Length: 189
Image (cartoon, rainbow, N blue to C red; front, side, top):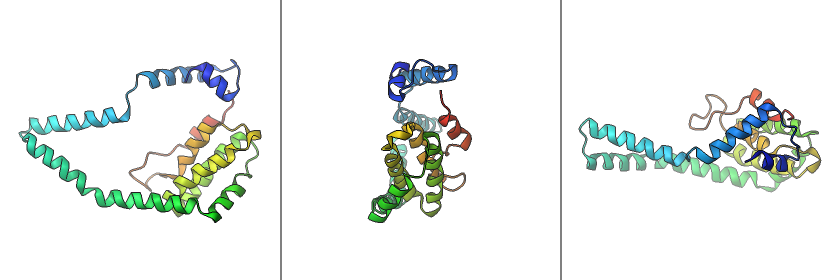
């Protein structure tokens, strides 16, 4: 996103500080030149396959090992998918919609809304990370409808992922943002 596009989205003028301009320039460069995650997955598979060939494994045995390894994680994959589907159903239920509407009225400023989303996301994740995943996204949408807050939707969306993986709780999830990082998102330009 260019600086002009950022200014248009956030409603800010060219009063952006040095760090904000630098961050936007790095973001522009990354969006243009940094490859998609799929490229890294393909490269990792190629490196592992080359390593297997280097130690004497045949191409057929490498392909079979890859295929068998993929199907061995299906039970775990099904469990995760079922958890997300159940989380989706619970988070979209009537009582949850009522609760989200009430919770969305709590924050008084855009900055506090981002921190509030992070807190609610973490608290809900103590009950279920799958419900937190959907619930937090719906909470961000509900708070974003409050135009008077002028909340940074991107920062709130990132804060909504705080509940996915508190350190040590869910090993396959990304490391959550720290409160210092959330505070950085909430600073005014």
